[in-house]
Length: 347
Image 1 (tube, rainbow, N blue to C red):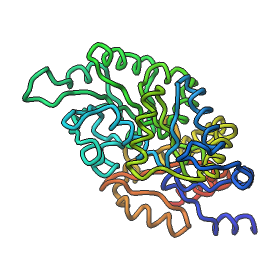
Image 2 (spheres, one colour):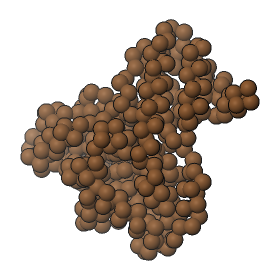
Image 3 (tube, rainbow, N blue to C red):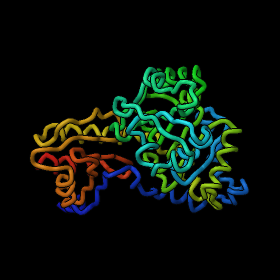
């Protein structure tokens, strides 16, 4: 009875995997980090994290930034010139969730493609490239997202990514990856970081979602590319001083929190199995990783469904007039999942 009371009083926040808190071991790594001034290139922990992440992907260099939005926006700006056009899927984070940054920061327009759960194909890219015509924007960059946020955590296959890369090479285009949840895709598909490093010209990887750090993302690429990116980071106000306290969390995460993502994926599938039984739940996007996007109707609107769960200190996110999103993460324990399923069963 006491255990059940404790669970009922516990906050179960499934709105995003950005709500994670550092575990005691990660905090200890942060407290004991060796630091310097990163703008001067003298923070040993930042330097270690950048070298470590670049080597994981087989890429030449890396840049530590405060957020994935910043790494994406820097990445796009270095690849493009004002007046260029960027190709991406219509639900891409770089397009709908980064404040119009492609236009504001890079002076570029975007050509969106309607894909399959956030994923596009090489043929679609080919069809979207502008001809050489002074009336048309110069297509210079393709930006992909893996996993796809609004696609319900769906994953590309490496073979499909290679096909898109081949198209980019034939048409002199650069290829950028928004890998905010790339770690989830790597674990789900049993792929390696080096496979991605061989395909993409630049990769943005986030440390503060599935890997559980409080702050930070990395931009990966060739050495001369990252030199340019470092200058843009300074212009954007992203130069940090004793950032090693944050970088130490990233080092800990890369060493300890990747394989455990399988637990988050299992939890998402368990929740899905409970949802599919309910008459008020409509279409559920296929669940590959830690994101569940599903329709609710009849008894509830998405807002009403979220409010009902909130009565039990369970928080989920309505993302449209018909859909709800649930995201599992390392702060969600098996007892929390069991409690959530019990509540869903009771609705």
